[in-house]
Image 1 (cartoon, rainbow, N blue to C red):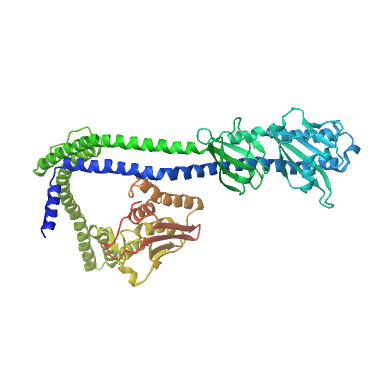
Image 2: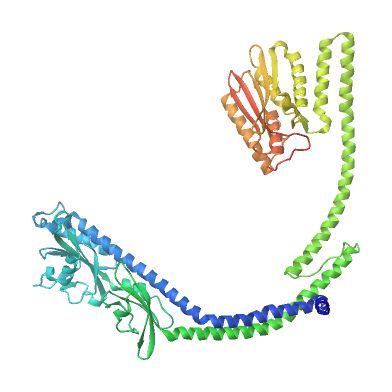
Length: 620
């Protein structure tokens, strides 16, 4: 019990220490101790990791070099196929070329083949020369020739191509062959590849294609890769002969018995030095690419890393101690200042401000403190202004309602006076107008029950029937359960007004307006249909475009719903469209279908709203 109490007291004493001392202790712990631990961990693991990493990187480099060499050799293979399929080369191989005469330009068939071969050496600068030999010993080449008195078919490279039965083969440096080049390349400067051309029907060898590849292509691929300080890449063939090696190689010859697998790591002791070899054999070319470097270079790298780590740990410890004191002071001092400012703000002095040019978190906190105080002062002032404006608005609203209420009360008086005099038609019109006016006010609410909206439109239609007499008839079809839903106020009146003035009025004979309300997949569908004159196609297209643009104008803030095209036809419809989309979003609104001489149908998509408090205005 005493021990627990002692631990608790010690922790309380630590928590009560000033922030400056806490920061110093923490900075020392998180800088010096991790640095020492990191140094020990690196010294323990670097010996293994560096070697493995070096070997993996070397293997990846060798793989990339092999891929580049395979790509070059694959291009040679494709060239031999293209040459063997050429009609002129085919005629030369079967002995028909001599019987051919010169073409219209005076060029012989042999000249055309040489031009054909010259094209490959021109396009592919890595090709030193190409020779095509038939089975009789005749040959055609653009850059190569043979010594007189020699039979090309007896050459070793020709026999290797025949033995390989039409499969492309690389035979390495062309040592001791009778074929020479006009450019006089040395035998060590080129690598030869051959492929026999076989008749597909008789399987008889018709000839051989010989291609010389410049060694500089291989050298450019391998010499840019260096391993350590003196390491390098070299390429040998399947017999261990050097295809490419730098000028001063560490190994004059490569022991083939050490390269028993397709890839691996081997070592050899030369002149008292341990030489490590990392190799990989290409299955396509048959060549082996080796990375050769002294093993002590890897150990030297480890020692250098260890020395750098120890130096780094020492410097970090010195800097950590110095930085701990400086950081603790630079952090704790402005925090103390902020605490002083906040205490004054708590006492009610909102004019206090933090003054400082720091750009770190403390400076940002101080500026945020200033912004907070300014925002509090602004909100207090704004609250006073809003309260005053609210009282003024309530007074104006009360004054604005006095006249409308007096007006429809007067209309009710006229209605009863007309009934007392027996003027029923005048009484009916006055009653409809009074009801229309009363429902239009709706006690200031923008959301009204569907039943009230329908009652409002019935009053409007009755007034219009008095004006148009038998020319106007109407019908309303709605499920009584749907009348409990809420809709935007004055939703149908602009649509019915357009139907009367632009449809029924322009029609010859009596017209009819039908209003239908249905519910489909959680959406209230209100349809206003007339059999009037209809809308011309060009006007209908423009009106639809205006309806579609309403949502974008509202979204960009370029227009207000009650100020869209305040003049011109379609204003009432555009106003309804703007109000719906502003309140409920782009997926709701109006759609117009019309046919000239038949009538117009306006369909309104309105969300299901079950009470006047359950509507949510969506941002466009």
